[in-house]
Length: 246
Figure 1 (tube, rainbow, N blue to C red):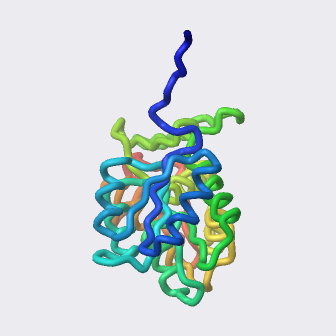
Figure 2: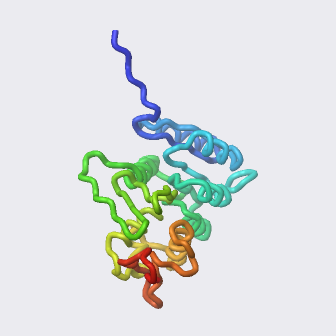
């Protein structure tokens, strides 16, 4: 009798749901489980960080109002350690928290009360951006100096060393590297990468660019890859990484 082959990862993906309201947790867990996701839950910030480190989920659904360690602080800790996609749950009237969450590296947000169908769709959209899609032709790797970005494996390497990027950081770098020497405005980057109208501030682009520079530049204060075009936006240098490229 043949035995079934088990995979280390569930077909849909492994999701960590973090919220201190049991009815919200159960609503999200139920709707994700019926769509084929494996779901684990945490009810406070300490437990969220512990499970994120031990389980390596494919995505985290993160409420901002948590006991012990709030969601913004959880997001800050996670971004120091990994590029795991984060979808933030926020109250409808907390625009400042939504903005702060995105600036800290969250990939998207959903406001409460929310539609479970919309939440699942947002999660699937984020995962499509962060995993290899076997049904599409793979983009060729892009290289400049010692920096290599591979859309197929969703990896970035700097002189052979793997660089951990968030989904948004990866998307930003891919866009810039794919169009060397083309200047992109902050407004264009917001619209193209985030895919929705932002809240009138372009600080989030600057913060993501700053984090990218910390990870790929030898000297983030004198960047040779991603350079600022004063009064306009950013561009990726065609001769990036070469001596005198700055």
